Length: 128
Image (cartoon, rainbow, N blue to C red; front, side):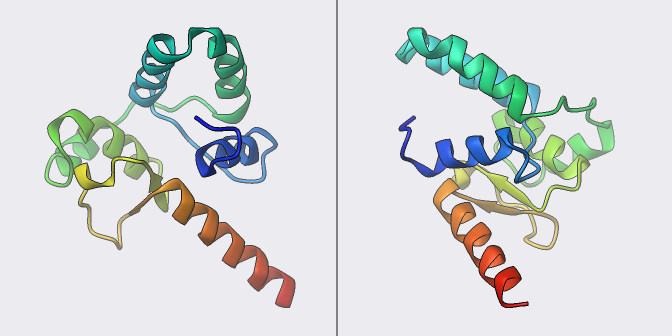
């Protein structure tokens, strides 16, 4: 992850509580596993960032898992279920092709698109 990229910017915004970001245990584990393989020296930084930026996620109800099974790739069902169970408005991912929920339920977007949404909200708030 680049320190100039949208994913990093979102992590930093979450770290200072400017956005309410959530991460499922599955995503946390996958992120750590990927970084361990690609840049193990960065693991201590990631662990601090994850612990400061993201609250724990409650256990996902079975009904949320069953509902998500219709709208995500099998390996990603728990991720979608965790997001919808917490009433998240956005699921931010670089892997959007594996999610296809009803957009009224949750919007699946890439990090750069989430930054655009935040900018638009800030602009609207500044005009009010």
